Image: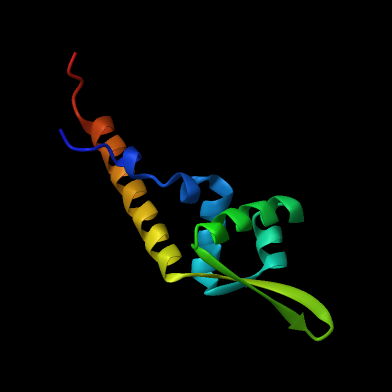
Length: 109
C-alpha cells in the first residue's frame, strides 16, 4: 500500500491563510503587506501572525522599508518556500486525483 497523499501535506503551508499568502506571493514575486491583507481579507494582526509563522519556518522573507514617507512591508518567497509550495500543490493534485478516481470507480461492496 502506498502512502496516502494527505499524509504529505505540510501543516505550516496547508493552513488556508498561509497557503493563500504563499500562492499570492508566488504569483506576484514580491507583495506588499497591505495588498496581502486586502486580497486575503484579513486583519493586520491576523496576517502578521501568519507571516511570523512562515518567516520562522524560513519559507518567506520580510523586508521593511519606505515608499516615500510611508512605511512598507514586502514579502517574498524564499527558495525553501518555493519548494514547499510546489510540494504542497503536488500533494493536493494527487489527493484530488484519488478522489476523482474513487468517484468514477464502480462500488465494491
